[in-house]
Image (cartoon, rainbow, N blue to C red; front, top):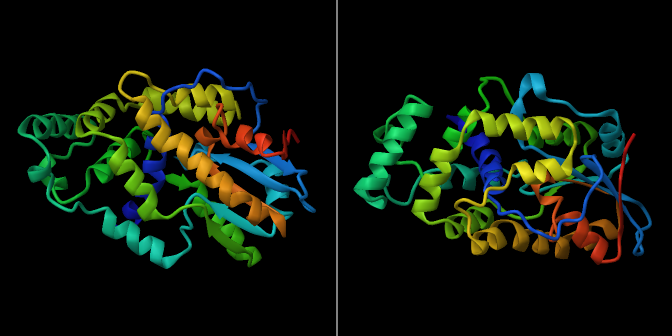
Length: 287
């Protein structure tokens, strides 16, 4: 259960990206998960790295260019600081629903969810009745990776930071992230997302990630079928805009290694484009 809860937010972050509606004014980006941020008064460069959050162990990789950039940085900043015990405690609390799913959902939704769970996980809706719907989404999403041995990129970076004894920070909290998610989707949309979740889509995401193709990755994790413009703005655009307000002060006095979901890098309101609009030089690190 402990390892499951640790994975919940990481998987939810994937769900964040997997249903974001594509934007039309997305600048084409070079194939690189690692980007250097300089200029605009910075005395040292910082780095921006796109993660897939979680991946099967055989597919896990961390390039030499990334290790070099990490070693040159003085601080690690993630979407959420998983090294903070209070954040982990909040994560465990929020994995449980405020009320049972049997009371929260309509009979029709419960029936659909039960069918999805049986098909994708072998579980029944009764077994997850006390979980939040987001936790159930996470459980089902984990199954689409098709493996038992999963690595979490954020946890790997945290271990690297601890070995170097450097500070670890976060751009947002568990409470704020799950609050956004909870308000962004209707129950209908959540059930639809669960029904659409499958290993083929996850395989496409992993393939794009391994090729470091930000544009393909951005396109692969979009789905116009059931995500409204309101939802897209809440779960992607607004969060990126919030991060851009926090990042300049963090980079001002030291070199920071930012590791966020790769889906946040591309697009008109992606972190790369927003940093460039703010006056920074953001260029891909190719080797």
